[in-house]
Image (cartoon, rainbow, N blue to C red):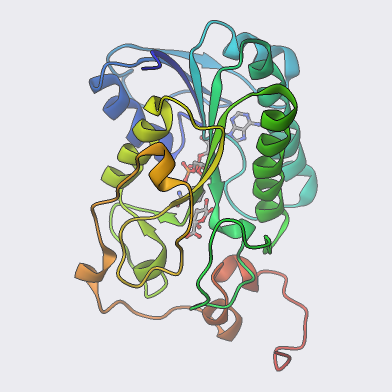
Length: 263
Ligand code: NAI
Ligand code: 15L
């Protein structure tokens, strides 16, 4: 079992939720973010501030760890330059640093790598990616970077294609995309503790009755989700026609300039 874990994005919504849970499970934690950790430090944790775009700082973060949970970076659609620095450059620095001692990387990828599939389309993780913006494109890059790093260097990585990780689902789309906090914890622990993963891609989603997603590497890493958003149904539809049409929801509708009547 991996022991000293680097958690990037520790000061963000999911990082703050995961850190105390992982500390309680007995991992030693090196928490990092570009901004200070806003809560009291959990058991077994130390904090190191760093910008992912700073290559030397990322090398220092990775040194001496056993595995990496990479949750840091831009988490919504933003202008390309911002996405590039934190996500493309930052991710590359992280994988390059991990390549030295081959620490497994568990990467918080996103459903926005496939956001331009229509809702209801059943997808596996080997279906072609259809990013719904520069943010989704940066996640697609991360998954492919992991593929290359395993094929070329034997560096293992598990890519969690997360849907909507929230305390509770709040809108109709979440009936398909919801990942409960407990299931995210299960997923992360499975990804860290699996004896071997190679390059794996797993939907970061609960066992939702209305899920669009299957055929992934969950079995290979031993992830079994337990929650189901359907117990919160019905939930309201939100947004315009483009939002309601695509799996990526409002991200797909952002800056959309195609004729809306086109198929
Ligand atoms: P968040 O935005 O709350 O947290 C991201 C953290 O990354 C922030 O604390 C931010 O300060 C830090 N960060 C941004 N730029 C940085 C840089 N240059 N250097 C170092 N740190 C930097 O996002 P959240 O919701 O906690 O998500 C965590 C990860 O999971 C993100 O990578 C996101 O893309 C991914 N994800 C989250 C989903 C969700 O439902 N919350 C769904 C799909 C993916
Ligand atoms: C994401 O990738 C975002 O980080 C998060 O804020 C949510 O919007 C989520 O996807 C989603 O699609 O619901």
